[in-house]
Amino acid sequence: GAKDYQSFPHSKPDVDAMRFDTLQEHVQMKILNDPEWKFAAFIRNPVERLLSAYLDKVASEKQAVRQHFQKNYGLNHTISFREFVNYLGDERQSCPLSKKNYKIDGLRGVDWCANPHWRPQTFFCGLSEFLPRFSFIGALDHIEHQSRALLQSVGLWESHGKYYHWVDDKKEMKGSGFCEVQPPKLRDGQELIGFQQRIRRDDSDSNTNNATMNYGKITTEVSDTIYGHSTNSRSKIDSYYNSPDLLEKVKLLYEGDYKLWNLIKDKDSLSSGVELASKLSSVCNSLAKN
Image (cartoon, rainbow, N blue to C red; front, side):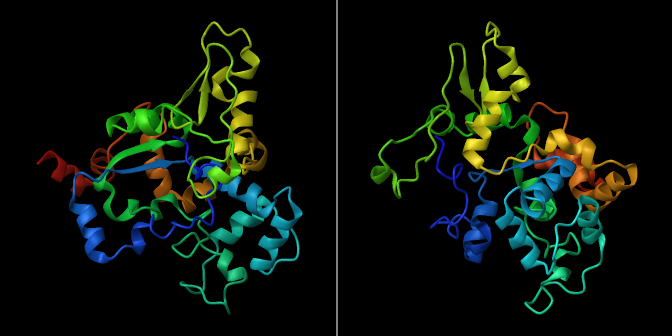
């Protein structure tokens, strides 16, 4: 079930083989035109995502991470969140970037050249090019049950979602592709749901402080263990977006993401790309009706 992509998502030996844009063109076209291939994407609240990127990369608690960011972008201090947003709102001089103009110019703009941690989500996975091709689009806020619905719909829940595979022997695990993180300890009445992202408790569980809304102590500990990049950005939104103009600026910068997010954020069920495209475009709407 839970492959080690969850515990260590970087520097995978097969990362290029898993990327669509590295495939030969005839292979790409075959996949695009074959209905057996299912496209899926999960969108995160743009406001929360940008703040999370800032807290994790720009104002990280780890000095080495902060210094790495400053060195990459020619800065000599940790910029504030407002300064960060203002840089993103500046016009970039060139794209693609070269080593000569990578420094501070690399921080400007939210275009295709932007750092992937704050590049618009609609610029990933072909969402802006062939949205109707996606069979499943969900919101990260509902990942626990939507990921389960996704895996069930393609017949992979039993083999890749329901169980948490883990091996204790480091030698055995090396190169095996299994998750390096031990499965979380469950109390009576609890079970793993979705793609090992949340713990669900039975209603009879009296310890509500640890499981309320699936965002309590247990869930946080599991998430931090698996990813190691948790910034608790959701709880910090009000303190960082402390003026209406800052929030509006981010919404304008990520207008494309917001158009998609607003259509799915309150939906418990997954959406299809055709459904969303018909709501976003009058042309797609007329084609869908025909």
